[in-house]
Amino acid sequence: MSVYKVIELVGTSETSWEDAAKAAVERAGKSLKNLRIAEVNKLDMKVEDGKVAAFRVRVDLSFKYEG
Image (cartoon, rainbow, N blue to C red; front, side, top):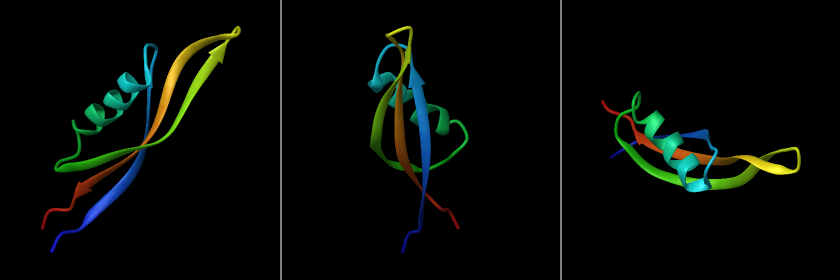
């Protein structure tokens, strides 16, 4: 039997939503073990002076509790 924790992360990138999602997961991977599933929940953009300044992604990320 396994138990998993799900957390919400927000990743940002000046180039793309894909890079924003990767940044969130890869950063979490530096401090969390046994990452399992990342689910993108929301995409949005930061707008400055009528132009896209950054891409933002909300990600639910699960990891396995170890005994």
